[in-house]
Length: 492
Ligand code: MG
Image 1 (cartoon, rainbow, N blue to C red):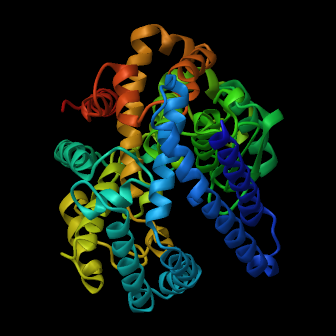
Image 2: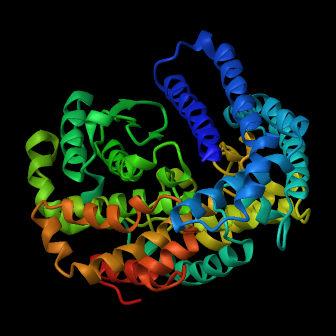
């Protein structure tokens, strides 16, 4: 198919961009930043021209009249969606957003450092205008936010997200209040000792290998913020080592490992087609959260791995398995999203989702954001930030023009619980297997049901096929009630 050979070019250009971006975030000297920006802009121009070309439009028109098998038909559906979206966005609008991004990000860095929202607000105001314009150009079924959400969670509407997040918020807020009454017990204030990065790397590498991460097609490096990049035969992850606490790097390795297993798990014969790409960001995040939280923070997992961890780190010699397990599952309302536990985390997302919608719909002006932010933290978590740096300036997303991304983190949590529940139905003994160090059974199930499906189905259909149910918050809420009810000995 001619269309697939053009798409293969787009895909190759994008994968070159991934490697440049990996380099930028790991080893690139600072002096190369401007050149790298120009290289990335050039690549995105090539890929934009390829996908919006008249030839692609013509080929899509012809294919519409042909009967296709399900795989080809899914490929055409996805290429058509991308073609439609990219064609609808005028080149000068896209260029202005791309040009504003580094300036606005730089202003955000300074604003966060100096705790001065006014340094960032003019750039955010402009970015918001451009994104609203983009939403109008792209079009939407119901509200402008749909058009922005589509970039990250295609075929899912703002209304659907709102429905599940509303239910989640109603359940979580009282749960968090109840759990927060338990003062972190003294044992949690223990000194963690010292943890050499080399020793950490050694043990996290072996855990990643047990999970099934293929180091022959991947690698582990360190960077300021952990991330996963690449696809198929080149999928790289990073982590950030702390010298006085092994937990952050440990869990970011398991989290990024979950993302990486997904990217390594597509059918290689579909390489450079949409069938060897992730379904949606929510589904992507379900893979990282399932490994990090549902498996990685479970007592079953640590029954097997804690002796190994304690053997590697003398600093843990006085900590029992139960203490360690409690220390990785402490629920506490906090101001910073990226440091939040798995229960309160979703409230951070609900707050951002509400603010983003009001911004896009013009109900909230940029200068009103700090106040709205603090009020929502008070409402959902019972705490107020003292500064904007620990409030509305904490995340980079808006500076980069990324609106509609935050909800995918929460959707990932919901999908992860739905998938795990379906996995347990097929493997009722999965927890025993995990406690014996068998992580393969979980991976094989994920491969067959999610990874190998690529973009065959939209997320909403995938979850229906795999679990028999639509996207919902029930399984995640049950999972939290069960786990934290037992851990804290409370009844929800
Ligand atoms: Mg992630």
